[in-house]
Picture 1 (tube, rainbow, N blue to C red):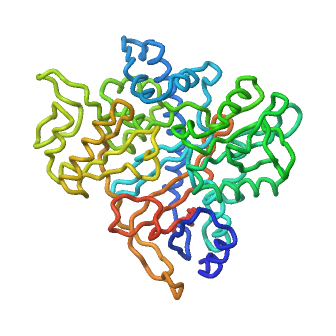
Picture 2: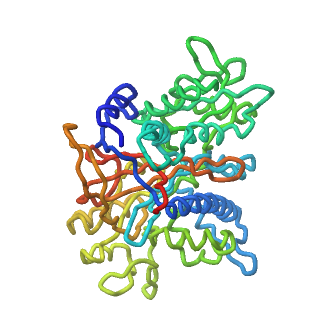
Picture 3: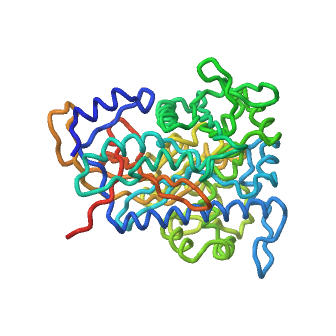
Length: 471
């Protein structure tokens, strides 16, 4: 149990989010041994999914067959994933030099439902890395009988290893890493500054900077460190790709990468950052593809975890054709606008933008049909259809998080009480040596009346612990 005063003092001394606060708890979130084992399997499955998605995209873009034993050419997959992106970015994402370069950090969003976990999103540029590391260290001494998931600073060391590998050597010296945080992502700057500072204390040259702090010197990319130029060998890009047009130094990064003097993670590969990858996983034409390109264990796990999802594409159909989608009034749809007439029960569906847009993160585009009026639902559908030429939307079955209990401190800090709420779990995996290492997890415990779970002022943010086995 962690004292309220100690938590407040620690957070006051080290702010982790810009102008953000959350509820506090005396205890970390306990995970059963079976849940930890499942999280480890989820990491392996997510990495396999990214590998298969890369192959799917490149084969589609190249007009190549997708299957081993029967013909299936699907250029529409690349068209979907490339939609709305500038041509230079599309061409860069297909560069042979980038083949196999997948995100070094993987974070799925998992909802705890009555049927187990539900994987609703997969984030490759996630916030919360520094926050989860900080909270894990803070709660580690207050979790009697349990060990913090990611103990021993696994979040800090894992992050660095995912960028520079096991040896951490480049040209006979330890590389300099710049964590580049854009103005759009400034909410997360404090936690990334903490992460960089902790790595500096361990003897590594890691700096959290703004894009404007980068500059070329003698043809080599540098950043300013205490008034002195420091060569940059590795960039961790902490900004979304829709934000590229606002990054004044993006060409400096690309020039240094093209010259072979810089590594960028995650690289500029927008097809890996589209939520519609989850809909492609469920697409009826691609079932054999996923069977061929995922292990049996990962395929079964993802089939159970990922809610059914569809791409909202308003392309017209022949009169006799129907959409692969949910039923309305017990009948299949011929047009996505038919969803506007769905009953409230049939509207247990989520609409959200797929990616490459300022509303694609932080639950800002999420609309739950059963939690809004018919008019709001119709307006949301029309907005999704109107934007489809540039930004596709996803339709996803809603899996309701179940009610669970956890102790929280009273807002005034006078004591703690047993609260009821709903849980989102965000495990963090760092890819090192081709393996996704589970290095920590952040639990978001929201009030039970919240249908969409995300960081909010009345939610509690907690690290996770491996609960001691019963008995």
